[in-house]
Image (cartoon, rainbow, N blue to C red; front, side, top):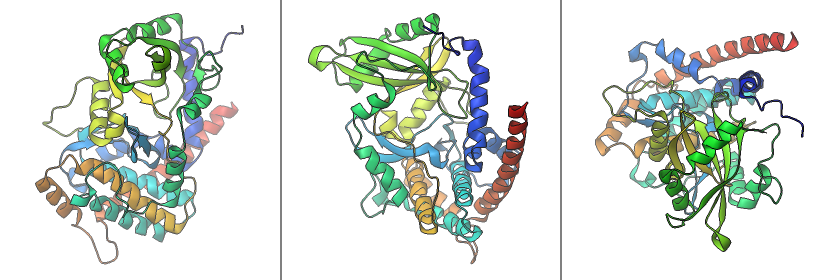
Length: 404
């Protein structure tokens, strides 16, 4: 059988870096999604008074449109929640607002909408965020009074109709239950595969899987197949493994697909004088449990090949919210809706007094011409300009490098 070109781990790095460059060059919005560190470098250069300090809560840390989408709970409920928590920390909720506002503004520009729509979109974003702090916003599933924008409704409808068979058709090949090697999945070395097998012998991890599959603690767990997963953008180059696992026996046997991902140090700044897990994977899992309970309930932390990794069970309903084009009405509706989702994640962690004080802070520094905080608007305008210039420079460098 012909050897796969990336069977050697030493060859993965350059290939993944080329892939990351390709993805970030696809559009200005894609560049924003893949340049989290640039965002926080900009933030670090600000005067501390430029952005207010909200109550210290778990924040997403990389709050852009693509990091929200349908998430299924272990019991089958479905909700739009934050779906990527690599950068989560206990920090300032204002950082999530700025990052989300930047992402939405870039989506508007990618849709060729006039600048005034961006201003109205930021106003709607604040309306949606603040509405999450009312008593009626408690719970995980949206109340029916909040209309779902068409682009969100379409992906939710798609998620609702998906089953394990859809996931298997996309990720698994043939009756032998193998992960297909190719563009997305690369072979593991013998040492890597042995480490994956050994990982699933650990009692804590086996207990997590049997709980997810509602088996008894002593139910057998077998790794059917595993592969290196070339996935993501800003995380490309980190250890990432897809594992197809069987739990139970006979008619009670169930298959599940696990995503195991190396947890790197977060670029997002942490609030001072707060206790957070020292282990990076435990940080990600804990943040998910606070911000996206449906996802957090299906995650665990472990060590693989000496690296801290977090893992989650993949469910067919978990989809990314891809927004390629928005009309004017959709831009406003999507901004309000997604900000409401982020707001719920923040608000559930705050005491009633903290909610009131944070809302009071958010209502400051507004004018008759813009019903949103000036610090938010000024930050987004500055970031859009900086990211568009950086995107063009990235494309120039990449094009020259690719042509060489």
